Amino acid sequence: MESESELFIPKEITHLIPFLGPLHVSLNTRESVFITFHPFFNCMYKSIFGKTKKLAAKPKPWRINLLLYLAHEGWLLIKKYVVKKFGVSKDTSYITFLDLLDNLVPATLDIYTCLFRMNQFEEYIDTIFRLWTAMRRFHRRNYDKIMLAFLSDIHYWKVIQHPIINTLETHLNIFDEYPVENFHSLLRRHTSAKVSTGKSLRRDALFLDHCRHENSFVKSFEPKHDYPYSKKDLDDLVKLSAIFHLDFFDNLYQNPNKAELKTEGKRIKKDYSYFPGIKTQFSSGVLPLGYHSKYRPVVSKLCDRPECIDLSWNDGQVLICGHGYHETCFYILGLRCPHCFDYLSGSIDELSKSYNHRLQLSEEIDSWTDSQVQDDNDDELGNVETISKQIGIDIELKKKISGKLNHLSFSFNLIL
Ligand SMILES: [Zn+2]
Ligand SMILES: [Zn+2]
Image (tube, rainbow, N blue to C red; front, side):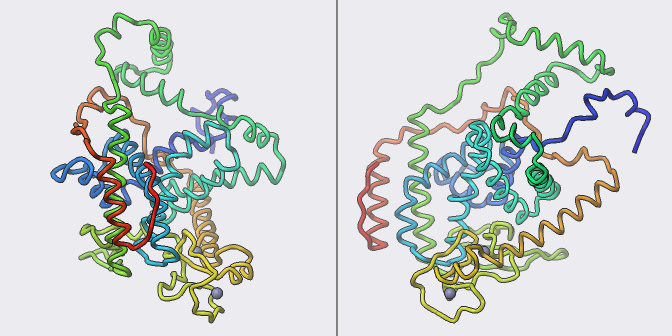
């Protein structure tokens, strides 16, 4: 479609290729995972910061980052005890939260800060795919299609051996939207609605860019943004998070097969999940990938290969999707889960059809990137939790682990 205004857009601009912004992937997936699992993070938050605290329905990005970090680091401290105790288990609650802490959270934390910025191209693409599967099952509209479009571009460039693939493989981290987003925030903060023409906005932008590193007079009046927690505070908070995880998984262990899946709603019926220890309902998006396939994991037996009649729980594993297979069965299946493969390939067909359809409609696509990089508002860190000194937290965590482990009857060797 050609409109009049397009005639004035320079060639250099119209030749730009849209590219999935890694910073936005990071922000959007962190927020989506956090909000989908909100009841879990709310319990963790109360356990760490005090029972009376209430977590906002949609906390500021810095608080989401903090809680994801605490959840992840706390999990790393106690993961081996929990995983060893549950062993080969297909318990829905266990697999759901294992998937959260061992798969989803680390993927959202790593995608931009580690994989992208450290030029880990293959791992970056794999993790984008993994995060896409999460966005798909969360029914995160639009974003599930954008990530797929990116993967499709990469695949296409590889197939036709386009030279951009070599650039991406060696210099992935130069395709970073952070400088632009950062400057955009700065510009928005310092310009008013009075700016009406591109020319005057450009002039203001040049002025701001010129001043931003030099204006020491203005700087001396600006409030300082020091991060509110010291390293020691964060270490203590991580241990409190580890204690929460121990209690949480201990409760799941005591209540096997108690996850409930219900269809609720007065007018619009929706599927919800309930887990032991948390009263609030979760959306069905929290369930591992396998629960979204046509063949849900069978909890009463290990192997989900339909032809398999072996009921033993030996020589096999449960995958992070929730399906389990005997080793020999998994080889027969070509080392992949056919149920989840069907679900994902069906999803790709459905979403790409819908994407192409929308492109043909040539709609406004302003709404496509819905999570914005947040401005650094002055009061962002104003509402921070104060934490009391955690005297004896190491002893408490050790006691808790030994208590839980005695309770869960197995021996350990704890080094903290
Ligand atoms: Zn089998
Ligand atoms: Zn599966």
